[in-house]
Image 1 (cartoon, rainbow, N blue to C red):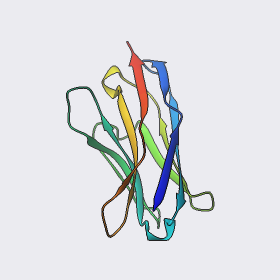
Image 2 (cartoon, one colour):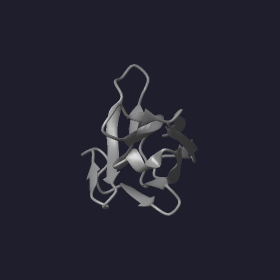
Image 3 (tube, rainbow, N blue to C red):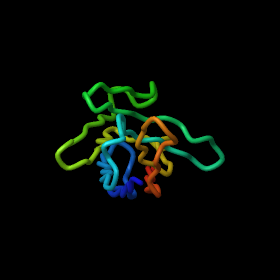
Image 4 (tube, rainbow, N blue to C red):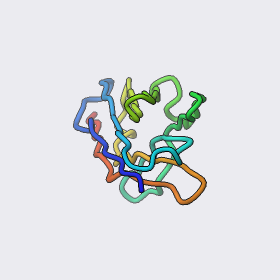
Length: 115
C-alpha cells in the first residue's frame, strides 16, 4: 500500500501562485510516476502534470508555461508550482502515484482562484 498526503491548497486571487505538495509513504518502490489531476465541479477529472522517476515531465496544454512539476526522490515528495493562476484553474487537485497495477490517489486539496 501507498499513502499520499497532499498539502498547499487554498484561496488565491487571479494571477497569484500556490505550491502543492504530495508526500508518499509505504510501498513506494512500486511507483514509477507521480503527478497531479484535477476535477472541477460538474467536470471529469483531468490530467494536470506528471513526472517520472527519471525526471521526464508531461503537462496538460492548459497549464504549460504556468505550472511546474518537480519531485524530491529523497523525500518521496512531488510538488506542483502553480503560477499565473486563473479562475478556470479552480478545482480539487489530486495527487496520483502510478505503478503496474491500479494507481494510488490522494484525498484531494481544494484550489480556488478568485477573479
